[in-house]
Amino acid sequence: MFAPHSFTTAFLMMLVSTVCYGSWGNTYKLTKGFRFELFYWDYLVGIFAGALALALTIGSSPFNASSFLPNVRSAGLSNIVCAMTGGVIFSLAILLLLAGIHLAGLSVSFPVSTGIAVALGVILGYVFEPKGNPALLALGVVSTLIAVVLAGKAYAGLGHVQTNVSRKGLFVCAASGIVMGLFPPFVARALTSGKVLGPYGISVFFSLGALVGSFVTNVYFMKQPIVGEPVGFADFVTAPRKYHLLGFLGGLIVGLGMVFNFVAAGFAGVAISYAVGQAAPMVAAMWGIFLWKEFSGSGTKTKTYLALTFLFYFLALALIAHARSAASV
Image (cartoon, rainbow, N blue to C red; front, side, top):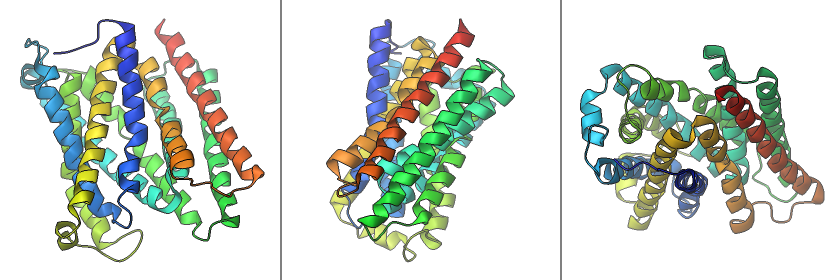
């Protein structure tokens, strides 16, 4: 299988992954008026198709014991189940994130959701495996939560220039972050314990779990929607082809980013991969601010909150990465 042999290659893969994670939301924004529950089906198929295509190509060349198919044959059943369980949890988290994007926009939903996920992930990770400098980790968690609060204040400031600002969007984003913070332990278990799955195998089964899980989570939200009236599969079938293509493209982008992140982490280490990958919300926020003009017309106070969100978020990532890097030395 393909794996980076230099830090430069691994770092470039991590940067691509970060841009992918922070950019897929644009494909949903382009489907104006399309329900996110319907968009989600194409999105999940795109993730799985992208992960599988990469696993069968670069993940299988050159062909050896670590290639995709031999690795899957040798992996433990519990590892595969853990990967798919992580995908099911991820599926619910991203579905809620899509609802958050619909309600609050890219520039708020990503920092709030992922910020909470990072804080929860650090806390749970330290509880189950106490590695890293606890003081730096604690400061990182506090900085992350400050960034989340500042993003919420920036969003609240839009109430002076927009009429569709509501607390519901922030609550949905927070719920997404809480759920998102629960899946990493399952992925870590599949990658590191027993008969492990390689990066390509974990990507395929993780995305398959997300797709399978959506037949429970997404079907429920189609019938009991967070926003709007219930929708059915007939609405999905009759949707414009362009919307289906955009959903599938969004999934392909995430599939590429996911595979690159897992592969690069094997060379550069989890701490560095984590720090670079979690900058994705800031990429999404910049798309929301500069492309979609989500804060157009906002006052100086609101823009100051937004700038401080960026500052505290990057500070949090630096503190967490340094705490974990110190532990691995």
